[in-house]
Image (cartoon, rainbow, N blue to C red; front, side):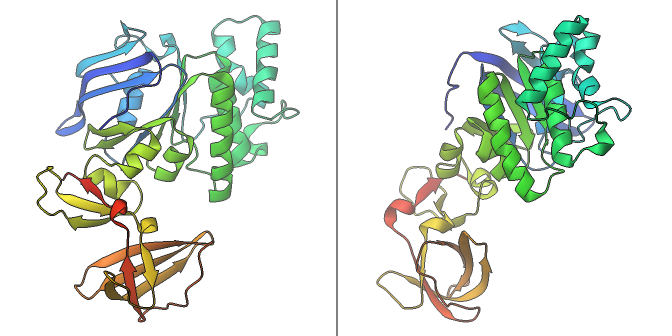
Length: 336
C-alpha cells in the first residue's frame, strides 16, 4: 500500500543492502525520493533509517544494490562530490567561527569568490531569519538559532537534496513544533528536496509530503502521512504510527488479521448504550487539546479512547464504570 512519488524521482534506492557484522541495517531496500518533496524516513532505533541516509550522503557504502541520482549511480562518489548537504543532530558548527563563517564554510571550500559568497551567506541568513547575528559565535546562540545556522550552511552550497538527521531532537517541545513549521516553509520556498530521518512520528507527519516507515532494515510502508496513519500496511505500522486499538479480525476472506480502531474514533460514556462495550476507567490523562482514557473492559482488554477538547467534558475518574463504542466505518482491516 504505497503512494507513487508526486514527481519524477530524484533519488532511487534499488535493492540496497548493508550489514554490520551480523546486524542487517538495510535488507534489499527499494525507495524513491521525488524532486522538490519533503520526505521523512521514520522508524524505531536500530531499524536502519540512519544507515540509509548515510549511504545516500556517502558516509557508508552499500554492500548490495544501487543508489541513483537522476539515473546515475553515485555509490562510488565521496561525500564532497555529491550534490547533497547533511545537517547533523548535533549541528556540528565550528565553535571558533562566526555565524557567517560557518554558513559560508562550504562556499569557501568550493572556491566561490568572496563577493558572491558573501551575498549567498546574507541570503541564507535572511531565509532562516538570522539577520544581524553574522558576527556571533555558536556559544552565543540558543539551540534554535544553532539549528538555523546549520540549516543555512546546508542550503548555502545549493544542494539538490538536504539530509536532516534527527535535526530537532535537542530542542524543547514548543520550539520543536515551531521549527517544524519553519522547516516546511523553507523547503517550500527553496524547492530543494529534503529528507529527514526521525523516530518521532509527530515530527515526520508534521513536515512530510510522503513518509517511509522502516522495520528491521526493510521498508514497511511508503505513503502520504494521512494514508499511512489511516490505512497502515501491517500491525507494526499501525502500532508505531499513533495509538492503536487492535482486535483479531473475523474471517472475512480478505486476508486481514486484525481490525484497527484509532482512539479518536472511539466514544466513551458513563451510561450504557446499545452495542457499547462495558468496562472501568483505568487511567485518565489530560493534554489540553484532548483527554486520553484507558478503559479496561470486562473481558480484560484495555481500550484507548481519545476525547477532543471541544466535546462535552466527562467527569469519569479511575475506577468508574464506562462504556465504549465506535461506528462501523471506524474499523480498518490490517494484515499481520
